[in-house]
Length: 369
Image (cartoon, rainbow, N blue to C red; front, side, top):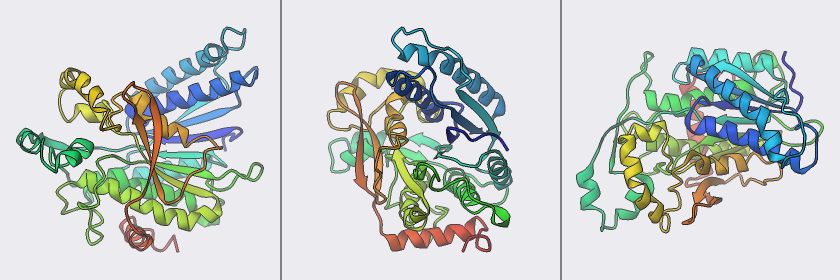
């Protein structure tokens, strides 16, 4: 079993976009905090990148190792300190959340590798958009639907879905189902082995499971009678609401054992997901207008650096998290990021019903009581 000294942070979908930028931010923050404490070297940090494309993950890992080697010296304001990157170990594990066999293999690898996981970021995901309804945008720009349209994109983005080989719907399985199976597998290892998620025996710190949500999350498109969002007109939006709702029951169930769940919305960020909606040139053409609209819509973070602000903030051990709330990366008119918080839309009863449905969906009923 690999060493688990220092903090261990696992990130799914970490080879690009939000996940990769989050890894960079966590390294930079660790180096900065250590430099401000006049340490000669940051405490050990292990980042595990769980990615579908291992070739891309290896390239991302090399970039992160180079960053770790330089980050501490950069943060130390010229003090002659080590540029060694050994304080930050980068591990790689193959994971395709749309393939339950891949999820089970990844879960077992993590169980074998780490005695403890401090942070688990459930970030991998897909958004399929068949087209942009420009007519809807123009027609509703000055209507009562304008606010919802600007803040969520609902109605403008015509969302699509697909079937996996096992017949499950692809968007929900990738964004929700695979991550649920991974998390339950870590919380309930086979043969009664101890879970790497839980309260630290020395510090008393709880493990945190941070699920990447979305400003596109929509309660009105989600139905408990259709938890897989098979018949939803907006499967991505419905699935993201399912993430928010599920965290309510997971917190009530596992927080006493030292595991906290937290949905975080990175807002509108121009990453590979955004490029799948409209071409990159369009985003840069609209950039000045989007920045101006921050006066009204603070979820227009635009850059991945601003989008990961709340994701990184909730990793700070001193940050107290509310079990019934969702956290948001926000950006002010002048471009300064900050973290917002709002109550999760939904009830504990609805959350437990969804949890029970997902136990059957992921075939975990016999393993998890």
